Every structure is written in structure tokens, then in C-alpha cells.
Image (cartoon, rainbow, N blue to C red):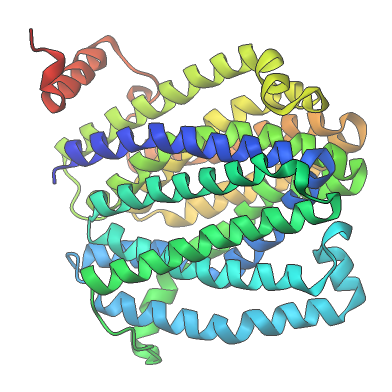
Length: 447
């Protein structure tokens, strides 16, 4: 499938994905309330932290090297199997240490989730999430976009179905059972996704996942991914540090309000996600002027789409958020409005940083995340105690700007590629988009 067709059909799948995940998020928040939503956000924060720390950025490397090997996944399958075997030992040990140490348990788990069963949720979510991630990255390197698109819709539909059922039964649930049931639904979705991904792997790839422990094979792979790994760890601060600070200074109720604002804004990450997913295998191959022109066109569509959607959401947020989540969450409105500029910056950086990697300047992505992390820590500690969740949103938007500016500087001054034609759509782009849509959907032009 060509790059244009891959992007077009992948982008089309994002509409139902966005709608279904929006339903799931809204209903889950309705069930949990502000306190429960805050506790859920803290628990998911720790799960994301463990997944990031123990994932070693292998997913990125798996896609990169599978693409470099012209879609041959054998080497990456062995490396992924090694990582999973390692984490089957390491993750339970880490979680046992957290549970048996009172200080770590109080730091790692919200007070509403201190039971050992919540650590089992984290364990299975991390391990199963890594399995699905590695298989998905192998499929991406093999350019199996149709399979990836179908699975993304299935995942969204599964989540929406689970939380719809829970919402309909909410009046029969004891308040103390709400958070455990929400986590049970989330874990059930992850389990079903993992089973289906494994079936797909057997049918499409069919390579026995024998772990690879040969250092001569692992060393060049790890040397490549570890720069990105450090960058991802630092980037985790950009996305998660504010949650820790808000939880400490403002409490779980305010954190619940902030989580809704963040969740609403991050729905727009579904715009750059299909673009990023599709261009990676092409971008990591041979670059030429034609491909660069297509990439710039994609970046313009991405930035313009997210900017327009953010302006629209910011305008209707005072009416939309109370309508969807209830008057309890009215405090999320201003926080969301201050956060939306940062969402635009991050959405742009998700594509721009890929071009930096292609040019061999991946270390500058690390510089960008380090600058953003320093800004996040400093501004969060200053603004959140003073302005609460609004301060958190302002701090995030300022720090996210660094994630976009630094890669742009690298592209302009290191790679000597003009950047001004990457910002927003031009009039000629509209005709280009119209021609692309009519070519893929000819019934639109039929009389």
C-alpha cells in the first residue's frame, strides 16, 4: 500500500477511535466522580512509569530495525522475547518491594488503592501492555497498516462497551467497589486485546519467539534505543510530574478535575498518531525530495487540524464539560483552555521529531525533552501551589513549546531544511486534499 493510501485510510479510522474512546472516558469519569478519577489517574501514572522504565524504548527500535531489515522481523522477535522474559521476573520483584515497604507503598499507590490486588492490576497491565506493544511495533515495521487500523478500532470499541455496561449498572455498585470495578473493566480490555494480538502474531508472523542473549546482537540495538530511552524517561516528567505535584498540593479531587482537562486535550493526539504510525517505516528508509515534500504536507495537515480543533474545543468547553461530566467538573474548563496551546505544540513535535531521527540527530530530541523537563519541574513547583490546576496547565503549555522549537531548530540549522512550509496549510494544500479524497472516495463526485 502506498504512503498516501496508508495515511488516508489510517486517518479515517481515527474518527471512530476518537468517538469511542471519548465515550469510554466520559462514562468512566461519570462513574468514578472527581475523587475516584484522581485516584485512577495516580494509579495509571504509576503503571505508565513502570511500563516506560522497563520498556527500554524497545518498541521504537523494533519498528526502526524491522523497517531497515525490509520487513524481516526475525531479529526483533528474538529481542522482544528477551525483554518480556526479563520483565516477567523484574516486574513482580519491584512490585513486591513496593508492597512490603510502607514508605514505597504510600508513595506509589493512592490511599484508595492500597490493597495488594491493585499491584496485581499494575503487574498484568504492564506485562500484557508490553506484549501488545511489541507485536504492534513488529506489524508497524512490516507495514501491516490494515491490521493495525482494525485492531485500534477493536480496542476503542471494547473499551467503550465495557464502560457503557459499567455506567448502566452504576446505581447497583457500592461506592467502595467503584474503583476496583473500573480497573477490572480496564484490565479485561487489555487481556482481550493481548489474546487477539497473540493470535494475529501467530497467523501473520508465525516465528517462535526464542529469546536472544547474544551480546553481539543486543549491543548495537541497545546502543541505538538507549538514547531514545533516556529521552522517554525525561519526557515522562513532562507528561506526569504535574500529576504528582497536583496530587500532593491540591488533593485527589482537584487531580480528578485536572485529569479530565488533560484527557480532553490529549484526545487530539489521535490526529498525529496515524500520521506518525504510517510515516515511520517510510521515513526510516531512504529519504528523497518527493518523500520530504509529502512529509511536510503531512506536518501541515497535522498542525492545522489540531490548532483548529483546539480553538473550537476551547470555545465550547464552558458548556461541553459540565454537560458531559456534570457540574462537579466545571473547574476543569479553564485548566483545559490553558492546556490546549501545549497540546498543539506536542502534536507538532510528534512528527517533527521523527525527521530529526531520520537525519541522524536523535540526541537533539533528548536535548528537547531535557529542556522541557527542567521547565516542567521549575514551573510546576512555582505555579501549582499558587494557582492549582490552572498553574499546572500553564506550566505544561510552556514546557511543551520546547519539544517543538528544538527539533525545528535542528531541522533548520543542522539538516538545512526550510521549516516555514511545515507550519500551516496553504491554499494549494486544500486542492491537494480534495483531489486525494475524491480519488479514494469516487462516489463523492458521482452524479
